[in-house]
Image 1 (cartoon, rainbow, N blue to C red):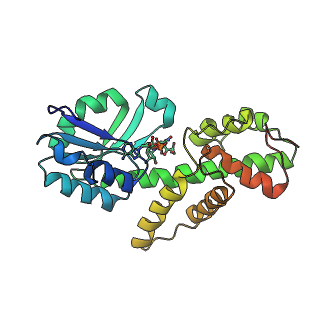
Image 2 (cartoon, protein in one colour):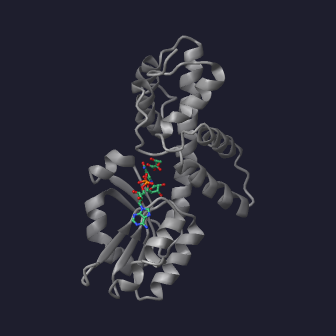
Image 3 (cartoon, rainbow, N blue to C red):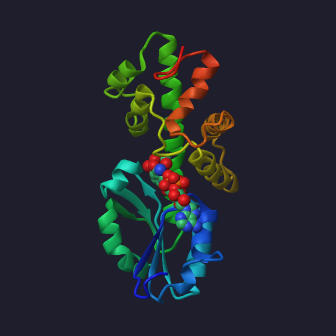
Length: 247
Ligand SMILES: NC(=O)C1=CN([C@@H]2O[C@H](COP(=O)(O)OP(=O)(O)OC[C@H]3O[C@@H](n4cnc5c(N)ncnc54)[C@H](O)[C@@H]3O)[C@@H](O)[C@H]2O)C=CC1
Ligand SMILES: O=C(O)C(=O)[C@@H](O)CO
């Protein structure tokens, strides 16, 4: 049972289907929200879906903020997320106290739903490719006698580094695949990127290659593991043992 004076609802579920279920499913929350409340939708979804949700919420007198997030579990816990937001001025105004509590940086990317999710797709292209590339480089290094811990120590201070390398490669070094961000997120997110690219007539071959590696990881039963486990795809193919694995 929701309080009747709710001002804002933050929805952070896995995907579009779950977002729709939370808002408009059998036990959907949206019809019970008071008019003027704001729905802050944070799952990574396609821009078109965000536009549809905005229209359906408007039909109930609700504001809708397209507000995908970036920064991972640690930044979320510390209230330091980056939020790529778009929506009407009233939606931003109603959401402001929540945004200020959750985020270090709120980007205002447009006055309707869609541009927030479009920017998030751009981020996911890079983030998904960077995780896969980190795993490729780390395991390539192992074939040359570069230990994973030394890889992190050196490359994190060199031009080949990335935020994802610095955030995820330590999980491989520690052999800790507790999911902070699951492998399962990537077929969804790179699928969104490729769908958007296709509708724009844009070829994204590097994204497509990374997606294949995540699909292999899912096929290996690693979907629920931390996305750093994509390194296991490379390790298996090369006959390498990652930290924490038996020889
Ligand atoms: N994990 C990460 O580092 C990041 C995730 N994201 C995105 O944020 C979203 C959430 O990601 P995660 O937390 O990792 O996903 P998750 O799958 O770990 O968590 C989703 C949660 O939603 C709950 N849920 C699903 N349907 C529900 C319903 N009808 N009612 C109530 N709860 C329901 C699930 O039980 C689960 O606890 C995704 O869209 C993801 O792509 C964005 C940035 C970073
Ligand atoms: O932080 C982000 O941005 C992400 O999307 C990743 O952490 C993947 O979930």
